[in-house]
Amino acid sequence: MSASAKRRLTAIIFAVLFLGVGFAAGQYYLQRTYERQVEAAYRRALSELATHFQELAGEMGRARLAVSAKQRSLIGSNLRRLVYAAQSNLGELPLGEIDLAGVCALLDEVYEQTALYVQEGWEPEALEELYAQVQYVNGELDNLLLQKQQEFPWVPWQKYLSASVSVPRVLEAFTAINAGLGELRPQAERGPLSRGEIAGDTIGPEQAVQAARDFCRQEGLHFQVTNESKGQIPTYTVEAKGEKGRIIVEVSQKGGLVLWMMDSEEVPESRLSTQEMVEKGREFLEQRGFPALHVTDVQLLQNRATLTFVPNREGVLRYGESVKVQVSAADGSILGFWGTPYYTAQSRLERMEYLQGESWAVQEKLREGLEVLDEKLALIPAAEQGEVLTKRVGVRYQDEYYLIYLNAETGEEEQIVQVSSPLYF
Amino acid sequence: MGKLAKLLLGLGIVAAVVLAVVVFRRGWQEPTIPPAEEPPQLESWRQTFSETDLDLLARVVRAEAEGEPYDGQVAVAAVILNRVKHPEFPNTIPGVVYEPLAFSVVANGEVNKPANASAVQAAHAALNGWDPTGGALYFYNPSKTRSAWIRSRPVLKTIGGHIFAG
Image (cartoon, rainbow over all chains, first blue to last red; front, side, top):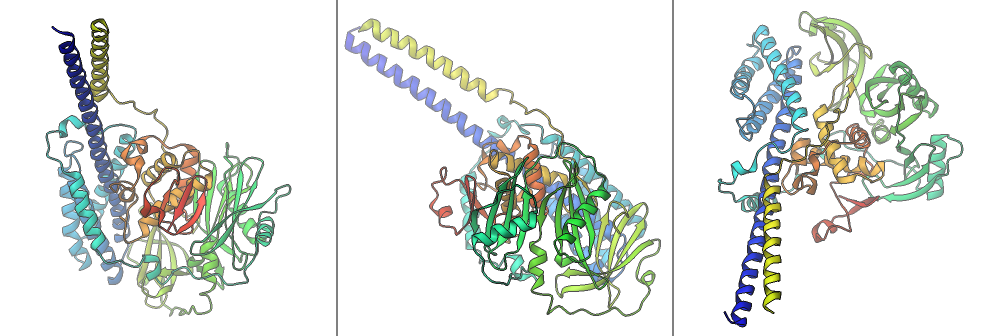
């Protein structure tokens, strides 16, 4: 073989090899991309299914207590919506993953019984039985999801390579359909409890630093303005480096109010009881001029308590003006504050009107078998009226605890919320 | 020239075989399973969100904002929650997170790794209402994105390496 022929042959072999390697690498990349798309689609379906089942369990729990036609109709709509959503999620899941036949049958049964429920034809025993089953599936799905989140991948991609896939074209089509829809106003703007504005004189950065210093009241911290926000409420971000972490305080440019505060400090241990932390949080807020407060939620995570308070004005709990604080379980120091809803509600106080309830006995408006443990008046957000005055009744039912909010005028249920104990009734 | 060509040909074949073996092995390789971590333990008096939602949100925060300041991590979680409330996005956390082409960390699988303590705390704060962004629906790293569309969105705030936009 001549030298030139050898060179040509070598070049051809090299070209073939490079093409082969390039093809293999390209195939590998495409397979990985496809595998991840399949993976993400299944994770989404299962996560949403778990979310919808959890909401279904909550809604059915409330259904057991509801008496008024209004509340039953509302719960019925929610049940139907959640059944549809869960069925849709089931359709997106690989059927080999879990036994779905029973779950499908359960959803069908809930759907059929919902119609009877709205017409008050649902037997309480049937409701209890379905509720127990939905709770069971909800718990199992939660477990499955937590286990699955430790595994990767869920589906061997090799099994899907034979399928004809045109994902990009489908995505493009959906993107076009989505883009063709008319713009909707965000829910927050439509609702009656949309954020109000904060009134007051415009402040400068120095006053923002002073406001942050006055709010935190910690010696030795050097605060400085590090940022400005142009969001719905223009603010200054004021920061200081504490002993164990960074403290960030957001101050409104109008009125100089501290809207929120965050401390990134990690809390390594827990020494205080929940009740002690609640008291620390209440003390912190009262020292800063907040009115008498009632705790409405307590969450414990990583040695921090996140507490939600609502003001108690003239014997009425105002849920629209909530304030949150995070308290360290180690020493009771305040690690977070969220006051935006409280301050934005202030501008609506003057035009807020509510009726004092007519005299009717709470027991008359509740279903039988509920043990009433507590009664308070509460002004709660409502979709149509803006806010509605309610009698907030803490009850026990079969070792479960609920807060039922009865319209102070009509006695109909406005909301039913499950809680873990009667501790903060 | 002949010896050099043979040498190159030999090296090329060896390289191609090695590459092919690596590519094929990686294709069927058992994936590395991240070390199992305890899921976030949340005690709540009045349950307003699920632990699975908290965990998913925290995993996105870790993947998108590991190394960012704490408020930057809360901000990433807040953007996802702002989308959940917005009518133009899915109305669940998994729906927003796994929306096609929404988050690069879903596309590259980073979201499947477990969250760290800071991310869990940040996700929890956002679920409780903290929103350092002032209502942002988008965020991006200006050094990594070339999208003219995202850069055209009104900037609300910059936190760490991320720009948050409405």
